[in-house]
Length: 323
Length: 254
Image (cartoon, one colour):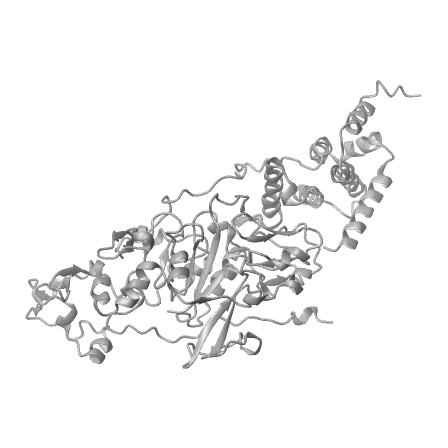
């Protein structure tokens, strides 16, 4: 008979049990053992040799698997998961990525204005967006769509966004859409697991590790702004943008939804989104809606503006204007 | 990943645990044979849910950001005669021959392909006075027949302007304003704004043209001639970047 009060293992167990354990933390402890178990199995069968890197990746993968929703993580937990993700990128792809977790700046609410008189349909913004946000090259994912509209036309449903000819075409104007970061986002309302939410600076973000891939948000979005990863996104290692954000352009998985985040990793640092930076015609204006001296406010106060599907009361923070 | 996938992975992991041993003692003896994995596995058990991995790199700070005004930016001069939103002064970029400051705009994946056209070779590299006699618009004896060959004077042809409408006849390095003032090439917007005052108003406000480097801090915008060739201002048609694939990828279709 073992004296359980003197067995150090038992004492460990007792102290662990004495703590308040949530389900996730308890699973984590169980999995800590499970990882060791799988390694032991692997060690017994020489047919499945694991290198050190593989073993570490597997272990990190398990810990990633049981982490919590980004919003309920403490700063410490966020730092840990980011360290794990950065390490995994190094182990699995040899990439030195840097993942930010920067929060919203106080007193900042992002807004966007798009000049339909200026856009020429070059799609330079699309190209920049793909490169900046590590979009799936194989599936050809694009966040931005540019519609070629006949003068006077307003119906996006019957408009071509897949034109591939010399632009601009006489008598046409070009209208770009992407995620409008609505003030009252229907996509957030329908998410059954709370994997998508609106940040204080107005950007609606997704926790890719919490998304279950139900695609309710895609059905709810009136602007077709969200994209689904039917397969694991493929980005060539030399094309990966290593400046990443946890809620933005970090590596996505198969079976999760993604969308434009106004380049959260750039805009929270005071930079312009990649689309606005790349636009050769200056059709894209970006700024802080709460700053009365910002360019976006000047545009909203001095130009004729409209928004898409205003009757839906989603209140997009994305305006169109004309010269 | 689907919920069913998660559950099955959990089950298999628990199964593996059960196979190896029925308690922590069993695990430990098994681990003893694994060798180098021992440390990693014990640390996982010691701090479940959050192993601090020493990657050698500094941990990501949750508050790090570039302070406004500290952005790598272009050389610029203060705009004369126009103010931005709220009456705030702003700056217009100047192109220098310095590749360092030119490359300072590289940030992330965005390169210098901003302008709709590349500006003609730098005036600093080919001073006007190397061909023009003195400062006046009079040529030296040895004329280069194809000087200014890149200039297609469509704009003056359409408006009835001559060289001296915009260029100062008494000084080839300066531009002439209708008021009799002179402006340097850095302030070419002052010449354009004499007729295109509506566009200049929008430009000063931020609706026309392009702001560089960021939405925060110092406001530097591109000048008129950074996008528009002054002698041929219309933007050229071009073939757009590839069209989107809007359908579900064919290799996944049932």
